[in-house]
Image (cartoon, rainbow, N blue to C red; front, side):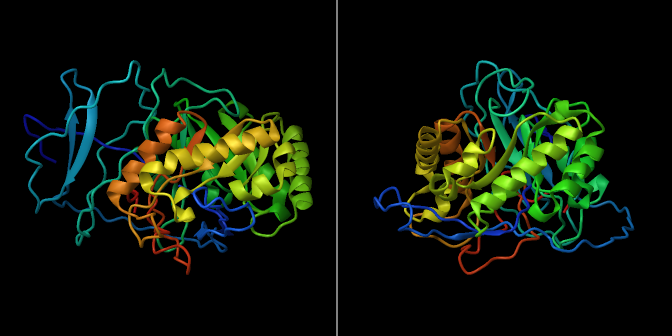
Length: 402
């Protein structure tokens, strides 16, 4: 690594989301369609169906790695970063310094510089911006709604194998500033690995029971990983977009009740919810009422009529609509914008639009938002309605453990 008088090296951050393929049903707010008239696009979060036992052999070599350049203001506070590979030249000028927040949130994780890239690295891409963090002390959250921002994480390699404990630790060494981390399931020993990677921080976890047919087993897996320290858990979800994928609301409500009972016997008394699309939640408010708060996945990109810079208005509109209909607090458990892919009407993937969308959402909803996702999910596959963008929603680009 190198350093100049104007640039300081630093690490950036990371993380996640795994889930089954699901059909995102988004009404066009601009078209005035009813909830059942407009069908949006398919946003796959396919959960790995098989686990592989991976034997890892590590060989160390020295390579000329990239420079991570961090721009700092007159008070020494970082405000922007850039990655420069050996064949590139550093930027000729620093970006404009943003106005500092009154009390910026603390860094939750710190780690060494990212590992060197492979021998044949792909061309560098502009790094997407991290979500706008609301001002405040960034302190610890108890449970449920009330946190500022979170991000989702999935523990899978590009070949669908499970990431090792060390890989998860490497990923989390680059994630900072979030109060909540969302996980979708219990496979790959992900709960225990992520808890270990974040030991000593004040981050909380939005954990997930993924398979409704395995509620007791997954609930007990969570309990075994927690070792009785439920203070680290913000909430636990039961299923991800199950009603949207065709499961009956009654089945989901029954699974919520079963999970509550098992988790209570394990010592957990915090919030239990189901997560579904904003359309499914609006059409079936009973699944929200059975939950301790409403948890919705809401992506403006799949509407096709919303440009990136209007994403915040779109998501907030749905939060207000569902909150009014159910009388409950609404937490956005997925939202974001792809940095690469094909256009969907007015929704165009690009690094610039990724930044614009995250900025818009952060401005419209300064709390109770979990961004999707920490890193690009290179293990995913595109479907006919994912616009070639399924792998490229990462807030922090590619995972350092890749």
